[in-house]
Length: 173
Image (cartoon, rainbow, N blue to C red; front, side, top):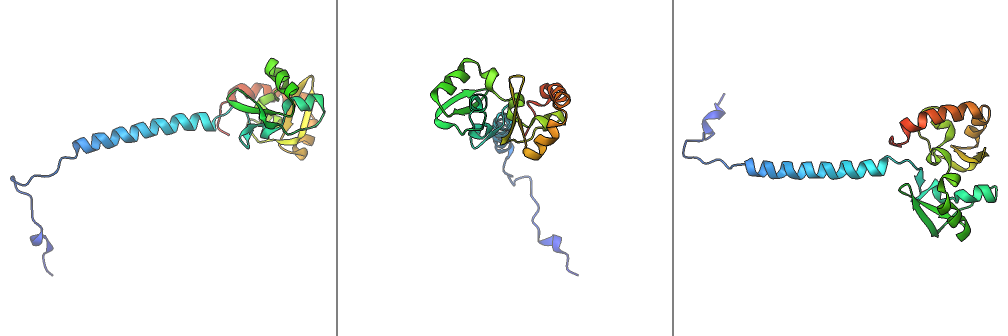
């Protein structure tokens, strides 16, 4: 068998190897900067207190309409307002003004995430047609089947959800 090591040239004291120390420092700085940017953007984007879908809070439905019209009504992008880092849409100028005057009154509980899911200890999306107004507060649910479960013990689920919300509201969805 032939010895392959004899064909490999070994560096001598006069052979200069390239210095990678400045390249490594530069690359590490870029990686660190990119990591900071991704983490900063990712945190703000993926950890939301308000349920956002279709680039709007509560899927673009008008939260005030639930109270005034007793049904879900899609808002218009021309009638929007930013609150809690989310874009809220409204079906009328009056609803927009009412919300601006008192967003806490009209915004759904738990940021528009599913009230039942919050009681169970996690964020879940919601459906516009699975809703309830109870004691002047809007609650949304994942779907009508989940709403039926939630309806069986609203006070108990609301109590559990209220306990969980401060711990979960900034978690990733």
